[in-house]
Image (cartoon, rainbow, N blue to C red; front, top):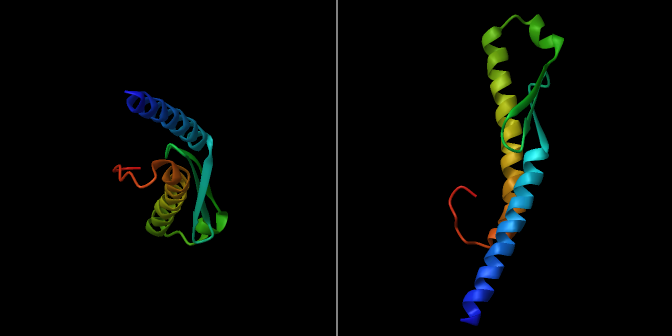
Length: 101
């Protein structure tokens, strides 16, 4: 019975640590860019925070290319957020193989 109590306490500690890491990640802003003319920022919760478009991007007049660069910059920022999450959560999960984390 002592082992079950110890396991429960460890699980609670892990849950508390995970919650703290998730909160930290959600408050962190991640940046991505595309073509050197579009910059996107997202929160750790993957919410878009900011898009910056350089005036040079508008000189070309190619709307389709600009749209693609905006998407690429957003994806780059989201990838940075995902990598940070994996780096911070990975050691905590210790190879538990939980999908989505």
